Length: 353
Image (tube, rainbow, N blue to C red; front, side, top):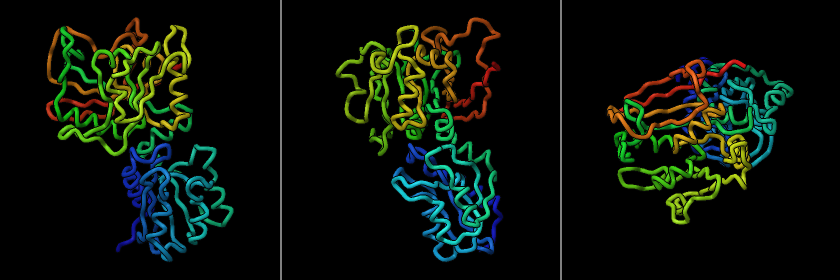
């Protein structure tokens, strides 16, 4: 096998890390590539599921003795603590690697410190290789750990003129089956799906991740969260069907904001405490407006159908914008055709204080 550069190995490690997306929470996605002293790949791995072996351990098991004197290329600083698994820093030292290349330092104070431990053992540590790519692949976990609440994605579906339903309230289906399948794949990458009680009362959604062709449920289901200030969710609502865990978050339990409704910042902090690192906000133009007005949305994924209605509910209500100068500016990062629809991904631009 031909030798590869450290840069190439990190690119491979980033791709490996992505294989764990949606299955590792509350842990990060991590990829690792091991090079022998001649630069040949002798082991590689990724963190596949929470509680399972870390990427470095999988790669070391593949490499065996060929890891000695080699280089470990890892997307995230090796952990330095004992949890459900042992510290990866110690495993790398025991394997006799001579160098560790890291894309992103670990922001988790419980697990960080691996780089210092490796250096203390005489191992060369290099930081900052393909950092931007590794950050992007692990953005939800990194963001959540750095600030203490989940990375929040607002997803909506609308016609080309911004309607989420017709004037008579019908909304099945605004978008195509291909777009709906794409949404279920998106649900499979997050830890929680949020909807307002108004959506539950109007549409009775299941909020599960499933295969639309045969209705089967995905193996891993996100937590279903109904934001319900006064506890109006019916006992027979489909979100209570037992197909996935459900939390009906009331103002009495979470705390109320000045408007008497569920305090959204407190809600996100509680979700983080429950192990939620990425959440998908799906239902309710009022709830979406409240999250946007509070500056709590990190990414927007809009499915736009080639339809015109001219009347009917809109996908978004009051978001705290009263004049064009206050508009929430977006950076569009991706536009993809999904069946006949467009999927537009955008990031809200941070406003200057």
